Amino acid sequence: MPVTFEGQPDLWLLVQDTAARLGVSAPEEICLHARAEVAAVPGRLLLGLPHVLDLPAHELAAVVAHELARPQAAASQRLAFRAGGGASVTEALVTSPESVAAALVHSSYLSFTFERFVLQYVGPLAAAGWYPVDLWDAWRHSRFRERRPDAARPVPLRPLPVEVEAGFAKALAEGLATAAVPAPPPCPSPSGCPTSVRLGGVPREPEPAGLRGVTFDGVDDAVWEDAAYRCVVGIRGAVADLLGHPVVLGADVVALVRQGRAAELLRKAGAESPDLFPVSRVLGPLLGDALRRRGYRPEHPLAQHVMVGPGFDRIDTSALIDPVEGGGEPSALLLDLLS
View 1: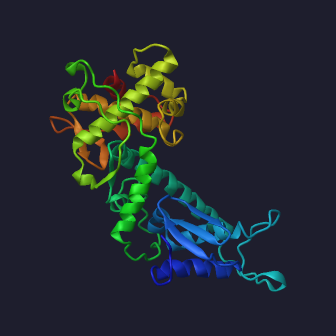
View 2: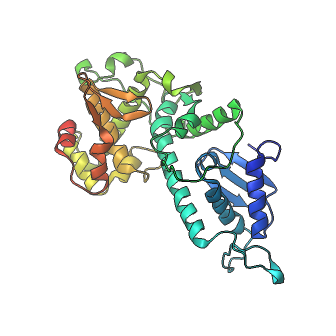
View 3: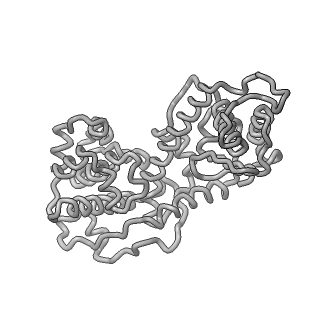
């Protein structure tokens, strides 16, 4: 979406002011896009909507400065954030190198967490033929967003047209839908497959013909069950290939994860971005499937990691996975659930 002074004056002025203070040419074209990424080529600047929504204005300006300076600097020239140019350069720092470094670290963290949110909550919907029209509101209130009460406010952004926000969400979902793992065949034994009754023996299309809009609250739980089941089948198939036998135990998966092979498993299973949070993406679906078999259900569509049991007890699968993600020992409860 083009950013103009008439449409988004604050954001447009931030870019123009940053370029002027750097002493470089302002981009001829400024655009918002769906990915969590800020990128510049001569004459064009792409601003990721997650960055605009989340980064404090001074950090967004520092990231923009970093991107604007790079294409216009000679390869051997040391990057310097100073006003002016040529012989009459002034020594007023636009922003300190430390501030730029901090902003880049935060923007990188934001990119990772946004992609994780998209993979975990948009990917399952895309595989089932849907895209969330309320993606951006969900992201604003997501557990993945870092809460920094003392941080400065983001640059004021006028409300985007509904069709733009929905179009961005659909574009992200379409990218995931093209890489969706085909649905496995229905289980022959109803007692051995929690989704066999719902699938009813009818084969599913391997890829959706077209994506339809839905809100997160409007998604039937069967969609999340089916998505989890697809993930589990893919992961177990990858483990079976690595081990060379069809019988896969939970202990086998945990052992491979602890050997640092979680990303390899995701890659074999055909997952998108396999190097992003691989341990939780391998163990999370397995734990969710194990708990569903015991009658547990997610607490909320956007809190799939918190499972509530028939007796209203709660199990946070992230709390079980985090120690393993950090290289620690798996808990007895995690091993018991996966057994």
